[in-house]
Length: 215
Image 1 (cartoon, rainbow, N blue to C red):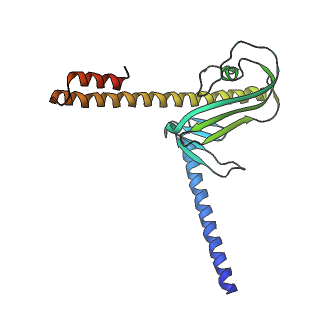
Image 2: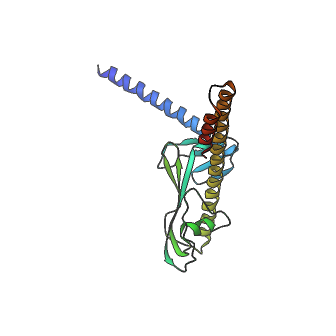
Image 3: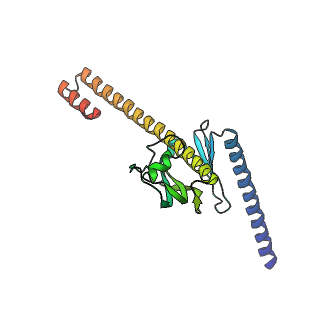
C-alpha cells in the first residue's frame, strides 16, 4: 500500500514537471516571437505592431504572462508622485487615455498639473483592458531627483509608453467609430429597401433614418 502511494506520488511529480517544462517552452517561444517583431519594449511590455498585440512578460515575483490584442486596450492612467514643488505653471489637466503628447516632460507635466518637483518617488502607468484587468507598469519606486540622469531616462521611457498607448487607443476609437458608421449605413439601406417595396411609408423611413443618425 505504501509502495503504491510512493509510486503514485512520483508519477504525479513527473507529470507536473513535464507540464512545467512545456509551459516554460511555450512562454519562451512566445517571448522570442515578440522580441523579433517588437515595435516597442517598455519595462514588462513588448508591443508588436506586426501582431497588433502586446505581451506582458513574467517577472521574478509574478510568474504569469499575458498576451492582449491592441483592440483590448481601453485606457491608461499616468501616475507621478513628487515632493518639494518648485513652481506652478497653470496646467491643471490630468490625463486618462492621454491628451497631451510631445517631447520629454509633456505628459508628466500634464499629470502633475504643471507642478515641477525636486524629487519624484513614483513614476508609473496603469493600463486598462476590456476584461476589467488592470496592470501597473512601474518605472520608479524610490525617491529620485528630477534633475538626475536616471530620472530623465526613466521619464523618457514613461513618455514613450504613454505615447504608444495613446496611439493604440486613438486607432481603436477610430475603428469603433468606423464600425458604427458602417452599421448605420447598413440599417438605413435595409429601411430604404422596405420603403422601395412599399412596406413602410416615406415618413416612417425618414423618422427611422433620423433615429439611426442620431438627429
